[in-house]
Length: 166
Image (cartoon, rainbow, N blue to C red; front, side, top):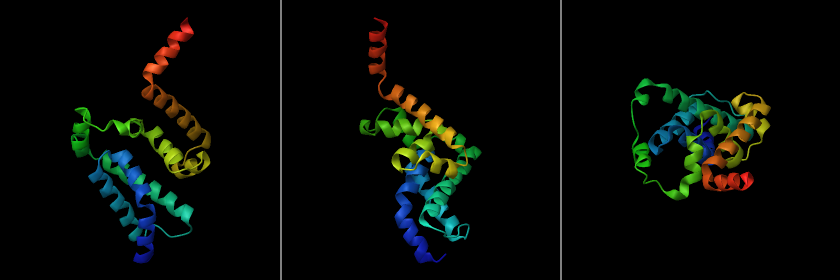
């Protein structure tokens, strides 16, 4: 691949890949590093261009794998990020409640939710990207919706439970 082609792909898919990396890494600096590593793999020749859909899928899988590899490193487990410290102090912007809750989902729910709701992929496409069964993706999306409902409206659920009991 020529550098010009990679630059065009970078401009087109940077936001999507950054979002995925941020979901894993949970801070801006590490997410940027993983985006850079993803596109570096493309430049190094790990990818051969076929079409737009395959390009985006390859980038998503590669970014996901780069993040997972980085998170497995032992020194990362001992480190606390600045963003996590701010979050623990409760100074996070309340407007980002939904994004924060999605970020806190288990890994098996987080990426399918992001790909489905933010990137517009269908469950069959997500299944191909993540190499799992389409019915598994649908089950994970349903479970993630339940978790999100519980996290977003605990007071409302409590009220409905009381009403049903009467």
